Amino acid sequence: VVIDISSASEEGALQNALALSAVDSLSEKNNVGAVAFGFTPCQAFVVSEIKPLKEIRKELKDKISKLKFDGQSCFDVGIQGGFQLLSKVGGSKNIIFISDGKTTYQKLREDTLETVRRVNVLGIKVFTVGVGTDTDDLSMEHNLFLGNIAALGGGIYYKADASNKLKVEFA
Image (cartoon, rainbow, N blue to C red):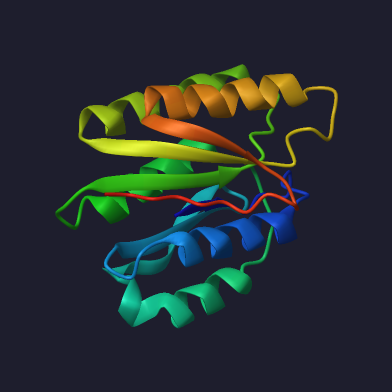
């Protein structure tokens, strides 16, 4: 699970709720870890190393619920952080990328899409969850960007809001 904690993400409480919902929706047989990205300068950090969910569910949910939102949107850094976490383990590899997708920087979008292409070639699928993407004049652009991340990552784009809980199933 990769979580956007940038200050551009005004929907922090909703993103936390969706990350917790994602953890709840996964089978205990899955191995799960979490990365968050944001801060200034932008960085990704490990919230939880990948372990069997049945062993870490409570601890992981507690750590996610305590995340503080601050800094810059750096989606490419988040995807790279998820890749680095997944590169340490075997098995099927999926990133659940939770973000509002908000940026006005075309170069950041291009860098992010290139990072997604690279990790997908290495066998990692990227699923995106768009949070609060209907709240401004650029919502169509943000949704398109998040949809492109999922398409290039071989995953699915889920548009989420407060009434929509994420359910993800991985084989």
